[in-house]
Amino acid sequence: MTLRTASLVVPLLVAACLNSPASAADVLPVTDGTIYSTNTAITNQYIATSSSLRGALEFAALDTSKFASFQLALNPYALPLGDLTVAIYGYGNADGAITGDDYNAGTLLGTLTLPVNLGYGQDAFFDATDFVRNVPGEFFGFNLRTDSGGDTFSSLEYNYGKPSRLVVTVVPEPSTYALLVMTGTGASLWWARRRR
Image 1 (spheres, rainbow, N blue to C red):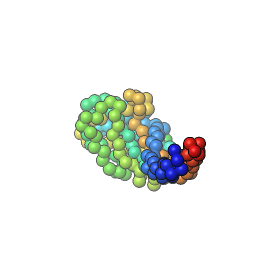
Image 2: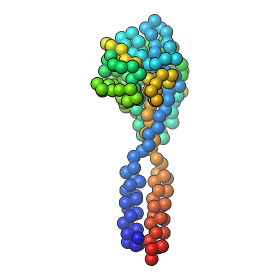
Image 3: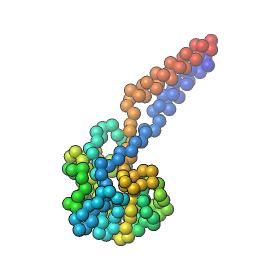
Image 4: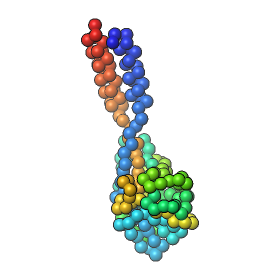
C-alpha cells in the first residue's frame, strides 16, 4: 500500500466509523405481571391483558443521556393473540412493585399494533423514547390494555429466551470514533511505510 492509497483509505475509515450503527442493549424490568380488576396483582407469571386484565412492567430509572432511543419490546408467550391492538400507558413515580393500585395507572402513550403473524420469540416494538426521557421518579412503568380478546406476553419468569423489556440504543461517544480513526490511520501509514 502506498502513501497515496493510505490517504484514500483514511477517509473511508472515517466514513465507516461515522456511519456505524449504534449498538442495542436490553434493559429488563425490575418487576412485571398481571393486574386483575379485583385489585389483585400477580408478578410470578406471564403478562396478560384482556378487557378485565392489565399487563404491567416497571423499570428502574435510567441515565437517559447515554441512549438514543427506548423501545418497549413485547413478545407473545401464548398464541393465538386475541387482540392485535395494545394500548400502552406510561406512569412515573412508580415504586418498583406492581400492585392492584396500578390497574388504571398511567397516561396513554399510544397504541401498538401487533403483526398478524407475530410468533414465539419475535418482538413487537413501541417507541417510548419521549416518555422515558421525561418520566419522573426512581421507577417508571407501562400499563398494557386490550379491549377485546386477551393477549399473553413473555415475562421475567415465563419466556422463550427473552422477556418483554426495553431495548435501548446506545450511542458511542465521540472519543470512540476518534480512537477508531486514529487506529485506522496509524495502521494505514504503518502498512504504507512498510511496503516502501
